[in-house]
Image (cartoon, rainbow, N blue to C red; front, side):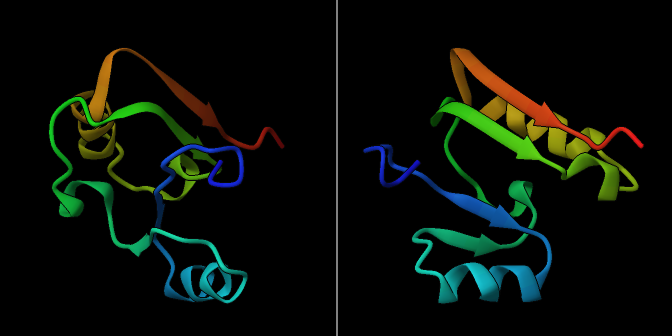
Length: 83
């Protein structure tokens, strides 16, 4: 997304995955849960959660935070594996 001209931010739950992304030069990467980052209301045009929600035991706070930080008419992309 960053290479495509977006002001991209990444949130990673696992410190090892966050470190791997940093070593690959991924900018604006935060190792935290989204609610802990305190983004302003309506901050993002798009939120992409790719293979995230299957790891959360309590996903409702994350979903509420995604709704809060998305701009009106924003897009939420969610991808979970289907075994």
